[in-house]
Length: 263
Image 1: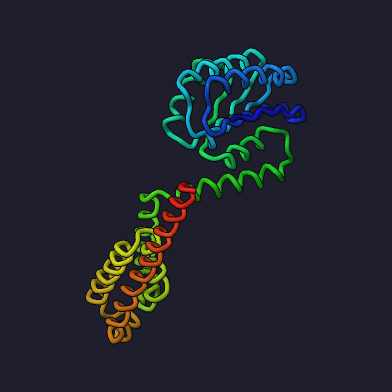
Image 2: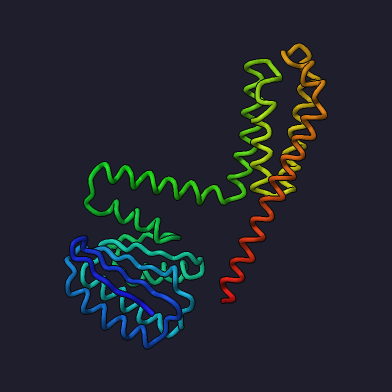
């Protein structure tokens, strides 16, 4: 299955491939494309969406190559490709390099949402709309970055270092020993499960123990010493509870995904 649409107002050609793409569909797509390209002005833009493509017959690649060469001959300027799968990403990008001229700029994105925002920046929109679009792109990039384990570990480590610096500046144990520590532990549990929560709680205990023994004159030392075991208990409970909830949520999402695929 496929859909082809040309937007004359924005000089934009949208191509979406869905399901299983075979030779017959390749022939139909090329025939339809020739009609749509007759409406295009030189310097037009292509948006190719492969996010809903399940499989691709090897024999169909020649039709994709033909699409690229046809588009190039009609004066395409920019190509925005939505390719969530890395394997497809490599194949389509290689074909793009060989079948578009050097003047054509090719951009690849993981989601249609991200590609649409970048596409908006390439069209004539107001400064206000550009700023709003850039902010949305930053939000998407930040959300994507937060999925990486390295980024999450850096945030947790940075948080602990920040709290240590904060106490050094104020020379007081009451600073950041309560809610901020629990926030970091809870965040570790949410991101990395029970193991992450317990590890963060253990790190909090070690930092706490070292500082209590080194800085005897700091304000609030006597109070925190009396409540030390209660604090440790709260730290561990926070990590275990949030870690357990996080793991339960992941298991539920997995079951829902499997159930959806089975249907």
